[in-house]
Structure formats: C-alpha cells, structure tokens
Length: 613
Image 1 (cartoon, helix red, strand yellow):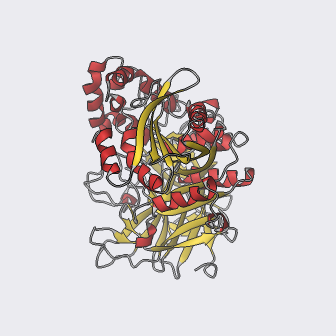
Image 2: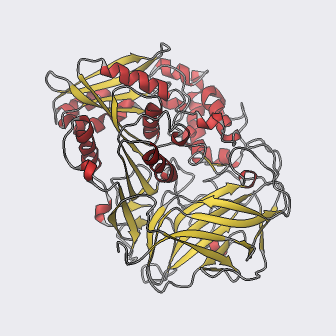
Image 3: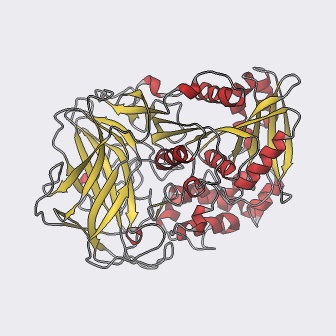
C-alpha cells in the first residue's frame, strides 16, 4: 500500500494534513520524516516515533493521536528506508533524536511539547533521545525497549542471542531499504546483489548452523555496514565502551538521562523484560525526580493487545487498549490534564496462573490470571526462598546433604533445541512465548516428539506436586555450583510449570516460565574474560527474566540445567577460543554440585498467600 493511498484511507476517517520532509541533522545527513497535523490552524502537542521499520508502515498509528488533537511525526532512522546516512543500530540516535526534537520545536504547528512512542527498536530510540537530552521532549512511553543490550537482549551473560542474526537476515535485511534507488545503493555496494541478500533470509537456518560468522563468507558481504556490525556484536563480549556507549544503555548513562515522566511496558515473555523491569524502571525510579511507571502483562514482545503468549491463554482482560493507554499518559504530561494518571500505583502487573488448564478452541492451554496494582518493583513483601537441587531429581527448600555431584556430557554438535521463551525476531528459527518442553515436528531441530527432560544432557530437578497454590513474582536467580573439564563452557537454567495429565492434555504440559544462560569465561562479571580451570568448581549466577505466576496446587515446579539452548543462544565450542572465531569444538564433561558447601539453588521470589490473593 502506497503512502498516498494509506493517507487517503485515513482521511476518510479523520481529517488531517500530511507532508513528508527531509529533516537535516548536525552533520548534514537528512532524515525522511512524515508529519501529520490535525485539520485547521494552530499549535499542537506532538507525538514522535523514530523507527527502522519504514515510517510509511507506521502511519496507521497516527490516527488515535490525531483524533485526540495531537500532531504526529514519524521518522525513518539514519540509513534506513528513505533516510540518508549509514546505519549502525542506535549509535547515532542520541544526536539524531536531539536534532529532530529541536527541529520539531521550531515548527509553527508545534506548541513546544513532545511525547515519544515506539516499541522494541522504537523504544531504544526514545531512551537514546533521553540520554542525548532531547529538547522539547516532555514525556515518553518506551514499550518493550531494546536497551542495555550488552547485558541482556543481544549479549546475554556473555552468550549471544541469535535472534539478532535472524533480524539482520529478515526484519533488518538491508534490501528492505531498497524501495528507491539511492537507498538500494547505500544498502549494498553491489545493488545487483539484492537477490542474494533476499535468498540469505531464506537460508538463515543453514547459516546459523555454520557459525562462526566471518567477513566476506556470506551474502551479507554485499551490505558491508550490516556485516561489520553483526560480526563486531558477535565477537565482542566484554561490557566496555562498545556496549555502554551504543546509544540506549540506560543504566550506564543515568546521569545524562533526561528527567521526564516515562511509562515503561513489557511482558513476562518479552525479549527485553529484564532490561525494562529490573534495570530501567528500578534505576530510573531511584535516580530521577520525575514519575516513572511500569506495567507488565503476560505478553510476548510488542503484543500488549493480545491475551495469549505462545500456547498459553490468559483472561480476555489481559489485552491492553494501547491507544487509550498512550493518549491518557500524554494528556497528563503534554496538556496538563488532571486525569489521575499520576495518582495511580506505580506498578501494575498481570499475575499469571490459576486457570483450569483446559484446551481452548485454538489449541492453547488456559493458564488464566488477573491484574494487580503494586507500590514498587520488586515487591517489598517478597519472601526470597531458596529451592535446593538434590539427588533424586529433587527441588526443595531442604538444604542438601552430602550428595554426589552429577556430571553430563555436552556436545556442541548436538545442542538442546530452543522451545519457546523470551524471544523476538524469531522467524523460522524459534517459537515465541510459552511452549510445552516437548519436541514437535513444527520446532526446528526436533526430529522426534520426546520431552527435553528425557535427554541425558538435561538435568532435571522438580518438587513433588504442590500441596497448595504458590505465587512467584519477581526476579528469578539461580546460583549454580558447577565445573567443566575445559577452559570454557555454558550453563543454562530453565524454570518450568509442570501440569499434571488431563483429558485435554493426556501427557500433561511442561510449560516454560523463564530461562537464561551464563558463559563460563564471564562468571566473574562482564568486564573481562577469565578462563575456567578444568575441574575447578565455581559459583555461577544465572538470572532469568522476571515473572509473576501462581504455580497451582497439584502442579510441580521444575528447574532444568544444561549447557545449551539453541538457537536462542550461540553454542559454546568449549575450547576457550575467541568469541565468534573458533575453528574447533570439543565435547565437555560438565558437573553440577549439590552438597552443603556448594548448595546449588534457585532463589524464588515467593509472595505470601495472605497478601493480595
């Protein structure tokens, strides 16, 4: 659909004016910008979004704001679609956001008040504007925001999230900027190579299996700026200036971050949940005077308008009316309307669970849940409770006795497949959101229908059937004592809600709640790599994304430990070679310790049953 046709369709619903301009940046680069203003003369508050996904495709988001009397500005970020310049993710957005908001503030149709919206990458551009001190920016709604991505979301406790490899091949494919000749020439040194880049997206599974990625070895060589960035990101594990100064690392730039109200949104199955809830909201609330709010639903990435996540179905009210939600926030801060939004509790969460587990007409399992307001995050009344790993596959609050360690062999050629989780940009590689931890032909890398728990490389620990409901809300942290027989390896952790068999699900359901990974060389922190000493036990911290779930009476809580989760994370070759530059792999013998001196456990944030339920 062309921009003109889409504009005509919108005009049939609400009158407005629309123009496209090239806004100059301080270095002379011009960014393509669509401007929508309500009908009639006057000055208006402005809602701004900056996107890498084509400003024209985002034009439908303008309507509810135009109806509410706002002007709307939608801009292609540098190097994408109609904008000039070279693309590097987020790096230039603090300055470009500053220059854009200054330009908007000088226009006759702007009343000097700007609010920003956008999800994922569009959330990152908002944080970048705040870090850059954007003038006239008065309030933000950074949804599911890509941020702090040297810690979680791109690199992840030292591992690399391969959805970014898929993003470059699909959503971020440089050929997507080729809707005009200048953009095509920028994206590829050889515009005639466009078919090769399109084919690259179709073969992403094969290329991911053939890692590491080396310069000049794939069709991505025809888009050198994209290839260069991806290789750097996959090769750079240390959390130094490369990651800290990439444009939207909020927790590394709290001092510079503009002190304005922000409403943060994320989901329990969102790929940015840790950055949004545990880092951005917590740290900005402590560091700034302006109001910060947090809402966390049961959603996958950028899906606030849905009441399901993967195969998990929630109550109908789990879906958020996003347009009304955003207009209300901006009415308070851009128009000074006393609508009560600033008087509401600072945190609103959807507590999953409590459903009867029946199969819905869509084939999902009814998990159920309900909304609840809170005064803070994490919750002050949390009872942090260690559940210890013990022999006999036990997970309990009893401190382990003199249990013998458990060893398993991890072969990089045969990784544990990813079955759902906190994923986005998944494409053909992965399934997003809640998933049964049983293989199925629809899942890539699954060649049978067996549960992952049946694999020798997965070590399972679970509780007996619960005698009563148990709410877990907050951060999920595993303290794992483990060793390997080589200089490096990975350890993974996965929390599972084990449903008992039912008429609808005769095998029960092993529903993923959260998972994470740690790379052995980064066990002491992300600032530097420290090789492991073969056979030496270490304590590894594996933090999953946060959650809120009632484990129902009769269910089991389960913790799975292994050393791979592919293709969510890149595979550790176990050799200790440089990241993204190994030539060898080796089978590692990895060992988990379960004794009083080395008490491996998951620290669960238990919420007392008498409080709020």
